[in-house]
Amino acid sequence: MSTRSTERRAPGARRLLLWLPLLPFFLFGILMEIIPILSVLLSSLRDSQGGLSLANYARAMTKINRESFMNSVRLSAITAALGVGIGSLAGYAIMQSRSLFFRKVATALADVATNFGGAPLAFAFIVTLGSTGIVTQLLKKAFGIALYPSFRVYSVSGLVLAYLYFQLPLMILLIQPSLRGLKEEWREAALNLGATEARYWAKVALPVLAPSLAGGFLLLFANSYGAYATAWTLTGPDINLVTIRIAALIRGEVQLEPGTADAMAVISLAIMSLCVLGSMLTNRLTQRWKS
Amino acid sequence: MRTRSAWRGAIIAIFLIYMLVPLLATLLFSFATRWDRTILPEGLSIQWWKAVMAKRAFGMTLRNSLALSLATMLASIILVAPTAYWTHLRLPKARPYVELFTILPFGIPGVVLALALIRCYARFGAAVVYSPAMLVAACMVISLPFMYRPVLNALNAADVKVLTEAAQSLGAGWFRTMTRVIVPNIMSGIASGALLVFSTVFVEFTLANLLVGARFKTFPMYLVEFTRFDGRQASALAVISFVFAWLASIGVLLAAGRSEGAREGAAGAK
Image 1 (spheres, each protein chain N blue to C red):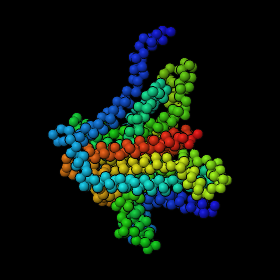
Image 2 (cartoon, chains in turn orange, red):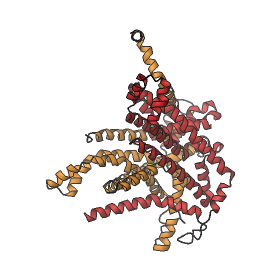
Image 3 (cartoon, helix red, strand yellow):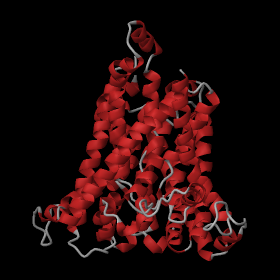
Image 4 (cartoon, rainbow over the protein chains, first blue to last red):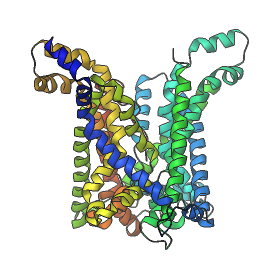
């Protein structure tokens, strides 16, 4: 009874106390996420004298920077599209396998591989498909197929192959819950009503899967857009990507107004948040079928 | 029916070849004596491994990376596990805010995070912004999602509310409830999260390279340096990175196997 009356006397203070254990976490989030992002946003809007200006954004859109955005978007779109296409097929093939052991091993492999990436991955591709790489040698000596000079692992095509190494497994993991949601009865009902296999896929299965495929595309796009270490190890500064450009500006290798990097970072943040928000939205659409 | 299983077999075969060949190639390459004239290596030896491990920088960068990964892992556990517990049990209202901070890192590329931290904290001097402590904090940011999800899933699975009430109605104090009931029951989630944080930070290159650079050389930075001038020794370093990643991932799978689904939603962020 007495505790109740103290509660009633100071509900505000008690409620505040309830939030107290979360203080370190929120403080960390504000200091390490919110304030740094806000400070980049603010400094992107300042000119060298400290006045408000859009000059940094104009500089972020000069030819070489505009090209870096186009290259990053193109690379992300290609690896996301290939990742969604091949990853969904592979995910379906794995799920249809009759062996539970194989399904578990394949999923575990996908699990591990999504977290690969960066320097070791890029180097593994140099060893495999570089100009004296092992597979390059094998194809040339055993089958007479010369990959070089038409293909180069240190170029965009090499980056696509290397990025797919973490994109494919990610899509396999993302699509699996939705594939499991495709009910066998739907297929049986469609086939019993006279539909062909192709018609079942076009009219039933794909529309059900569509939100997951779209959400997967957006997440894969963001995953590739933000990547830096793989591209840097594989191609160095030769390839003009947004992340490579921002990093070069940070290290001061490029003599430009420092605000340019800020404007490019803010544009990148906008692209990334659209992807993440979009994928959360499609996630919500997917929930409809899970009943 | 036959054609259907044929394409399935083909796509699975391609997937497995694609996933395994680069790893096996790197492993073999690190043991091969000479391998640029023939299909198979001309001989096997451990000379590259010996050479790379004899270098002083090898031990130093490996120690730096281990220290960085362990520090980030411990700090993440201390920051995230109590937060997830308290939000889950006492303050569900706070959950959207907590989740906002754990989802945000997905939308921040590593280079952008590094730039933002430099812009924000450079005014406190290079000793603050370019310090290993700042690197640990930055690594905590990118690994927040990896720590939070598994712990949250474990909390959901363990029905922590009932456990807490049961323990307290049996007379257990706050400390006893935590150490004897709650922590053991969500241990698999904490372990999964911790190992994911460890493996993410161990291969992290972007933040380390841009925030501390040569002042605190990590293992991935050493690897990238080597790829530019000695591929053979670099392959040994890459194999070591892969082994660490595999060990951590196997640990995650074992821990997650004990509480189904604790691993869910933990993928992503390169």
